[in-house]
Length: 201
Image 1 (cartoon, rainbow, N blue to C red):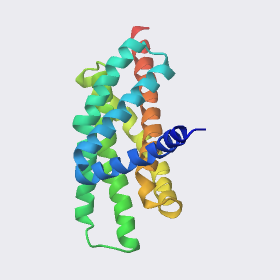
Image 2 (image 1 turned 30 degrees about the vertical axis):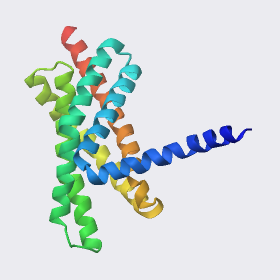
Image 3 (image 1 turned 135 degrees about the horizontal axis):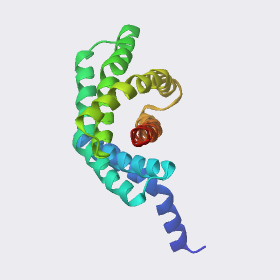
Image 4 (image 1 turned 180 degrees about the vertical axis):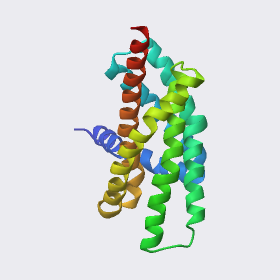
């Protein structure tokens, strides 16, 4: 191995860390824009994966993926940022077990329902649903998804606090959210498709 090859290998091995450091810097200096970009990217990938899993037409899937990316950038990302900023303001200066439980309850009983309802509405709208169908989708899918959220995310938060370094919480939460969002996307697509077949039968 030549000296040039060694330098190239070292550069490749340090690239992910360099990229991650730049992401953290961007998150600190431009939190809203960074979260907009993150949400757009993850929503796009979620739609592509869900399209592949459900056997939906890929051309249509990519168009919807563009719509979901726009939702993530313009609605999902900023909404999440400001909802959590609101929670931080409410619990600012408060510490201890009571504050931790308060944040957990606020996140699961206030933030999660808002985010899930808006996400379901966006998915249905992008899929071409009318207002009546969008409302029905929220009514039928919101509570089941919230139940899963309430079962999964408190455990995820505890795992992060106990076993994962704080600087790695963000990618951990993003990874979990990506999996959960993909599940939500797939289950919603299947439910809408089933409802459409029922009407046509």
